[in-house]
Length: 265
Image (cartoon, rainbow, N blue to C red; front, side, top):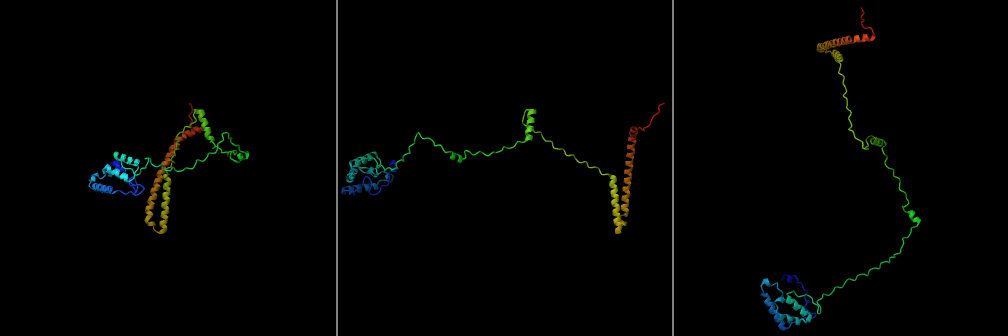
């Protein structure tokens, strides 16, 4: 049933198997038979509506309609075969053959004749002027190679002679150790001299301003303390100097030959 539904095609009115080129007029009996069939079709349940009309028509009515449509024997035979097989009726049917009319093939232009190829053709030699006019005789420009580092090559040769290997062993570079600058220790004796000089200048400024009475005793006391410290430093230095002279004097006298002489008895 599904195959019959899939084959249904809308047919233009006035065409198809049942319509001949002329106008078909059914007889009175055929018209009454068709009216009865249509009335019977209206009474068919909805679930049977998909059946084709010719499946419900009796064979006598079908044969009468084919005769009144003036179909050829081949067309009648073809339609009866379709009814017996249960296939859908064809839309078009030739009167003498079931082959479909062949479509006119598009006329293609005739192929162009290929030019004849001569098997004995030889390549033509170009004249010298044509060859010289091209780039065949132009010389390539000289491109110098990158210069080699002579010092590096010398080092490479030394490595080959020494170790048999041209690879240079990269030794870790030792960073130069920065020596700390030795800051000389300040001389305390000179510092005391500068401090005393500063206090004298300060006292002279106060005298010029008339305020020396406030600071005179303080300044003089500090100066006396500085002088006392200077005396202690001077005594220590003199003592160190005397000790150094006492230790180095015999060596100096022996070197000059003026050392103590011992008389032999």
